[in-house]
Image (cartoon, rainbow, N blue to C red):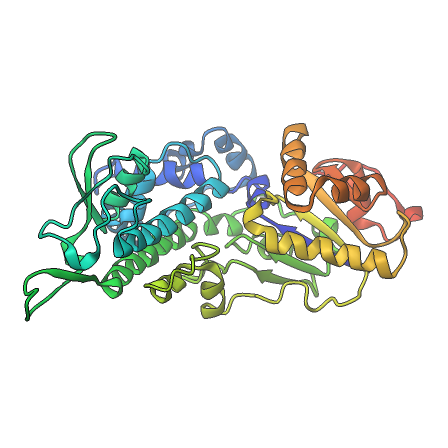
Length: 427
């Protein structure tokens, strides 16, 4: 029987690493608020992490920062359109919110370009085709099909510009630098097409710089913790884990536990010094036929293939009995592909093998409290349906354990029930 551990950012947070969305934004905002000559130290940086600061002091020794890297990140932060956009977004609390917002931005920019290209009435009361665009190339949205904050977002990425400040009446057009002008003929001097190549080049450059911002954050403010533990973690709690899949960019499991024979696959890429080998994008681009190929590099599947991420999720386990553990993963629909793969594997094994609760085939969801358990259960029901989740839970194939419960230690460390040891443990 294989034990497979699947981790999300909650795994890092459980080790009091400053890897939440709030941690990154708070620390970066703090850096930008100071003069270039300001001296950053362990205390003034990690106090920006709120309640975690006291826990960080308990678990880790203090260390110094690489000032050259801090100066490098300051330069990027001041000009990167993505970072400046997120500074103004106050409704983002989790990485799921963050990923959803990235997807919203990219797909809305693409959809808006297509609307302009075809002059669709769903975007505007005008049905102006691109060959008929005037010098200003502005369209009035009197129907208010776009929310005001959406228009602000479109303008923030400089692909579009706007005239007017009203909520229901404004003029929105594509920035002239992204338009193709007729040089000769009867339409000389008129704009006749959208330069998708130029738009793609600028947007992908901004996204790559934004990824660099992520890489630098982890290099500067997270990785030093791995070498500054006050007490080493007990690897025995995970000694029977045979494979580890992580949605994180960090090598936390490898660094802290180092289980012999246990391989880690990074499903969304990993942070590596000086390289942007992380997946950050959208699940799909609508198939509209115009400019679509230019936006394919923004998709997660393209980035996984291009960056040679670990893409063979569960393909090595065939018909083996597997006990899956989800630790610190949100189970959100953004990772539906992987969640479906786990449940499909379980159902296949139950259909073709033992169907009683003593089988080795199970899914264990590790949670922090009742609130997180409720949230995870809602997400699972939304993805797999209430009938399957209720049946698996009732029959003992799907279980929820508190992170510091003796039942979890039993499940992780015991090969047979006769070996159960219910002494408490803490990760």
